[in-house]
Image (tube, rainbow, N blue to C red; front, side):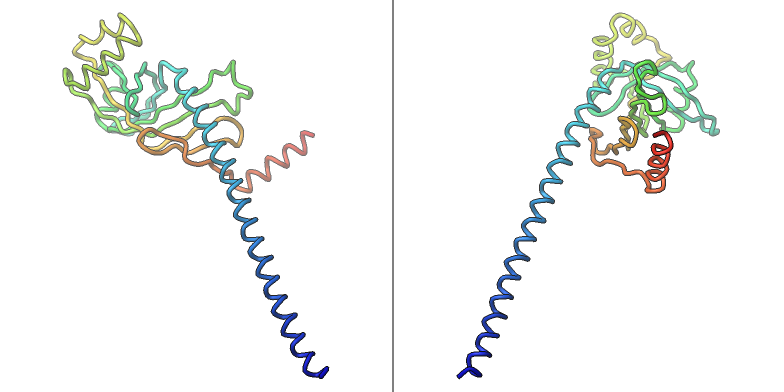
Amino acid sequence: MDCLILPEFIVFVLFFGIGFAKIIASGLHYFGCAILFIKCWFVMKDIQFVQQAYEQFLASFNSLILGSCSALGEAEASYAPFIRHRGAFYIYVSELASHTNNLLSTGKASVLFIEPEESAQSIFARKRVSFQVHAREVPRETSEWLQVMSLFTDKFGSMANLIASLADFHLIALSPVSGRFVSGFASAYTLSGEMMQIVDRLVEPKSIQKDDKAGASRDA
């Protein structure tokens, strides 16, 4: 009789153990899913907060820093007042300026918005937004030209209304292709999409992170 009971007991223990293990595994699976969900929620909230900060930062500017290049490869740094309309930055620039000919001949440029030195927490980590842009001239007196020039007048007043009639000025749309928002040390985000939204946070290479930690230890 004892010999018959023993195998049944072993089967019962094995069956119970397997069932218990499945319950534990299932619980760990759901626990892991819950942790992943919480992490995703915090990442999403962080992206929303950064998106708001990025939009507010851009809205504080009336002019942009422009990097362009001639057909011969000569670099030019300049600036221009702008209007942001439907995701593009519109500038109204004279043929006398080198950047105008650069934009018309190459169709490429970079745009920078950067925090003033006096308001930056660190001169090495000034808040900034940069874009790689495609440059396109807007033909004079088209509906797009009239609409954007009206916005220029609304924003910049009589001066914009005055230069609107000057034939040597060109309205150029700078449409972002890619971008980056840097909000401080180790806080860089990629921008993408038609309206250049925050899409991801850039992670520094581990070698740089180690160097930063080592420097922080020495400073301490």
